[in-house]
Length: 196
Image 1 (cartoon, rainbow, N blue to C red):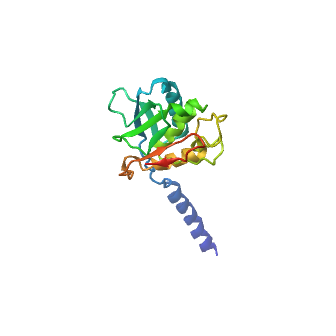
Image 2 (image 1 turned 30 degrees about the horizontal axis):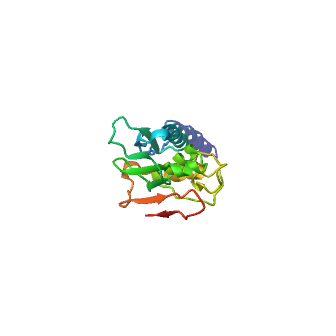
Image 3 (image 1 turned 120 degrees about the vertical axis):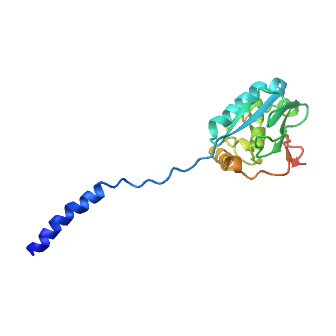
């Protein structure tokens, strides 16, 4: 018995010194994709410039994998904003760098009393790959005209921001759509929304 205790007494410090000297194992840091920067052009946006700036800021505050920046070089933007006399419409994304997205900010929606910043942010949501959900509440940006003219919320909700982050999560390696669908947002109850 005394021999066993002596052996254990010798083994315990030896075992402790072995484990004390071992550095804790760390997993390799996870590679995070670089943030995708999309540039936009407001050269033909006219009176919408302030609403677009706020809409882009709202998206930048809500998402992590994509950033919206105005271009310094006309003609080089990934997507453009244009003021039109018709109804708002956008290219359905997600649009990536080198893309050719188009947002038409229609005067008819303003004439009916809808908020300019909400319209700009909603149409930008299409550029980022989000579809309409007109039955949603005012807190849901992609509910568009559904909640009526009293709704002025121009910020995406958590679910919308999460979907955009998923759309851009693969960074530059993301699979990019090969077609361009245009979403036309008819902001009145008279005509259903369609795409062409």
